[in-house]
Image 1 (tube, rainbow, N blue to C red):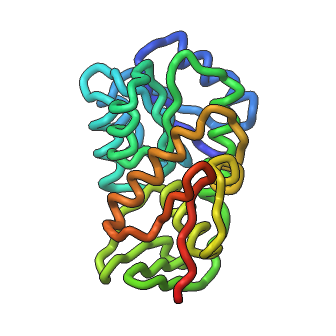
Image 2 (cartoon, one colour; image 1 turned 180 degrees about the vertical axis):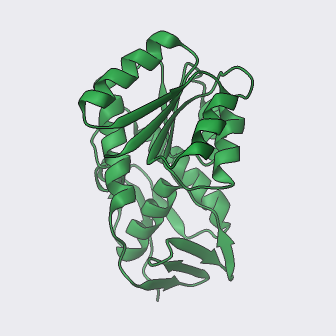
Length: 221
């Protein structure tokens, strides 16, 4: 049974999330502030974390940063902060997804399912090299000029997809389907955030924007 940690200070929202997740077959642990959430994270292993940002004691951004120092567990931020700068900050802290309140419980369940499915898939024993980039599927690690690049789960999956299909242009909708595992109209902006952060981390300009279409990595000459 997959284990999910909910870190949320509002009792009503914890209940709204916990009950459907439990009915969907997940084991759910809930924490009401950032410090309690960190302590729960250290007590046992979780498969996914749903994390509010505006938390007492330790805010969600800091909680995310602390967890990322120890683990690549998928993290979905749930928050009333819907400004672009807030979402970018969340992805900078290496969160995998960002859902704004008020939210659809069905949407949350779908994204949880998609992230868990992608993180649980076995990786092939292979190394992909493209110019200065080396991607090890066995280690699920990416290196640029030999330096390890810390990527979120979704950033890694985007890069892997583009590297395996060099020359092919992927629309934002296709990336949602292939990488996120669902089709959600209006979430194209989230794809843009991940691409932007991926480019910044790699610091090599190989992900091309095809205007009006999507993204690709060109074939090597």
